[in-house]
Length: 600
Image (tube, rainbow, N blue to C red; front, side):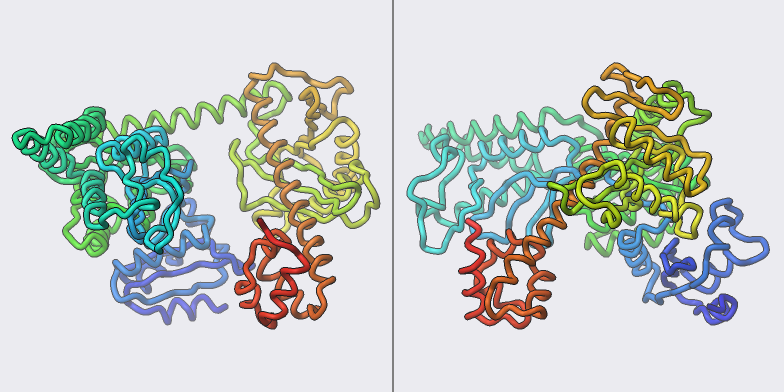
């Protein structure tokens, strides 16, 4: 591609630019108010000035761009493309865990309220929350205050359950699955739950208190007692929360702590003046990314899928494209959103609290990784901490479908984008030693090639097995002329570490940090190999089963395999689902079900 011609033809309009390398991989996605001006900066004599950019620019072989109607549109598109391609040189928001949410299933008749780690576009979600225990406690308290159903039974279709669930007996579910429950009355409870979760806690509690007093005055003592219990349940939740003065505004507070290639972002959610939640996220960054860039990337990536956007976002430094971010967030929220950087007062203290948490999270993260890697240096006598560790394992079933796996850990953490698996081609029957030799030979063929993932040279290789597996792996490395890589094996029975320099294994205490890191690499290689082996077995089983069905030729067999993947999937499928596959009519679908059986 003629880059100079592309640069000359870039429009002076807002949009997103996409850099690709020689292999066509997306290595960077950026947004700009003017595509021409921004992209030209990367290639000008003065340049961007950052070392990361100087490293990236020579790899750019192709520039794609998308013109958008506004910078706000560019922000959203950039965020979506970053999530899709995970470019090497972008700041990437990586959840260090999947956080729980509280879901109100408003898409269902008689909505449920439950905890979940998955969201959709049909229902209402509140969160994310940092503690699953807190979510469960909140759901339990809400159930006591406003009884709702927890089961996933179909309700409102005329069918009734034979008996209600345990929660009905406790007075915590009206049991619409078993009895006729007025939908309007049920939905009043759901509305109160939604208001409470939105931060209108005082309004909800005040309303219940008024109803309780009225019931008491009318001598409706049973109803008054129920309302009193509801108030107590909600206040038990409210009392746990720290109180702050945010001028009555729903506020998020974001702070970031930074190391060389990693940043920790902490977000505090203040709703109705109370600290509702605190969550933290890991961000993968380049060494010279500035705080304003990190914050901008975090805000755009986090709020693109957030279920609750606040009136105000407090930050320690103003993010890049702050004005455009405000406009974009305002558009998403449907009301004004302000990003502020306080210099004094309660909001400044809130920001410092978030910063303190971010620093503690980062230090904990760095300390644990450094401790593991430093102990590994001491145990193995390495010259430096191994940045890239590759783990290998063999998996087979009675001599068939022999496969191997390669997993990668960078800085002590899994890097799943670099994982590989291999079908063993040259070894017959069960022979783990020669299978490992083939695997390492094929892996070493790609060392120092252009592929950034497969061509990267590891600092340490871990073989799952004993001295024999290590010998055959080392032989493959020597035959391929590869040097400068440390190699060890870890035998599972007694967790013995074998090296190339001694016949005697190293045996470490089970609480040793270095051993625990090696165990994680070994176990991950084992899991990945078994997963691939299982996939191949299921595929083979699927082929053998559907080959026996009269009327299913090669073309229909391929269509079924592409659609269902496994025999289990076909067994679970209804005849209608089978008939939705190209070339399969209802008569053939029924015949397939007859041959493969039912999934129940």
